Length: 234
Image (cartoon, rainbow, N blue to C red; front, side, top):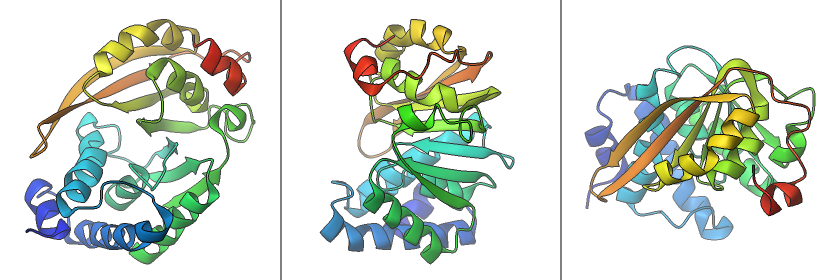
């Protein structure tokens, strides 16, 4: 069986030696800490290399991450895509989650890997998105999974600066969710910029990146309380 490092080098051959080193540290810590913290169900070498690293870095071909930008990862969980993005791009990444112990893992893993461009932010997105310190302060907001797109838009678009982008990382039903979220995107100041399908090697999966451009400020009405968002999505 190939190791995570061997698989990462095979499927992500354009990364530098330093990037591969950082990813190896992230993988080792994920396996070690997951035994007690239950960060992810995906811990086999192929799963880490392809369903965590390859999937996270499928964001790079969009071209949005080529220069130093401020990134917010909403609902980062065990640190994906925030850890690989911080390891492999010049961007400054903020990993957000409502669970402090997960953010502690992300922060300690970044330190272990020598990643200085990552910080953490604990709290619920619908509450933080109303705070002046975070509202419309990020060039790019990303989120992997977490919720259906019409709900996710209300959590994420308030963080985007006008002219910035929100990238939702979805599964094979991404286009179906997009049709459901068209109204939410418009109401929150967004405009669809791109839909990019991403085949995941080995696992025969098709993931979908939905890129939304922020073209106008989000109305102060949003985000609503999470109860209202869940009960009556836009």
